[in-house]
Image (cartoon, rainbow, N blue to C red; front, top):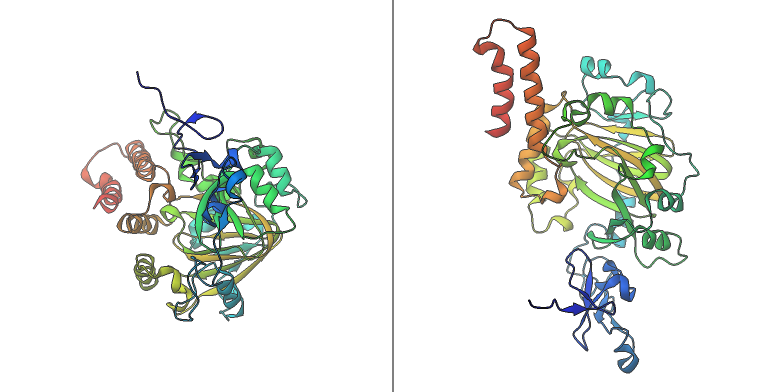
Length: 406
């Protein structure tokens, strides 16, 4: 039996789940964690020298920056290439833009008013802002809860997704490494964490999601305990970003509705209504090879600016197109949920994801399975309510499934 080839200073076999970097001198491969090279730093290295080779050849050679407005900062700056989303030049230009005030579309409400009965009666088609969390059923850590506290409850060895904002590129690193970066007096890059789902950690005990997100959630109400598929965990995210972090325009996966609460700091949301015209423009923009060079907010009639300050909870309905700028160092909590009020829009968003060939990593986990569970629940409810079976009682189920699988 052949012996597996060993790599790195740790002399371990190749592991696809761990980031590795090749030495340009000896051609051996090394785990980034073993040689203290983070994945997001590797892109800055022009010629890498491993710990053994740098003794004889000197330290690694770094790439030279030639611009501040392109994802590939080594491109010569001849003034001919447009600004790309997330770069420092882009953020400066974004802050100088003018937008319609978000108050035009925001519905200010008290926490106790945001009930399932209210939304079923009045609809959930515009964002809701709740400036005091009392009555929402939301429970969070105190405002002095820090990034170090997140590490204490979640564990420093947890590998998280981190976005290099200037490149709009995702990489993985240990939470402890991000915490070290966050508190560093010098931060050569803007790094942003927006997808730390912590339901399986001790920090989950500190957070209770808003009542409305629990009572309306398909997963919480219809996902069976004996499901073949693992239950999706999408209700508890911790978002940690430094000033000038930016997430470009997107629709949350599966057309889910979202709740956000800014624990401390500030975020700015750029909100676009999901009209048929805007959704068509969004799909065209998302599939364009020059997407990062075009500010989507300029392609629509109105893009609203909504400043979300400390202590505010924002509820965003199904399908709303939005971008987010972290205007101050910020920690926020949030979650996603599918529900009964906007089924058509949820399915439309899912169909769009399929046309755009969105990777599974960025889609709602087991979206089709939850749709089947909801349809089955509806069918069972109809059976209980109607004693005489005929095709009429199945029409709502048929319509729902036809729309989903047409």
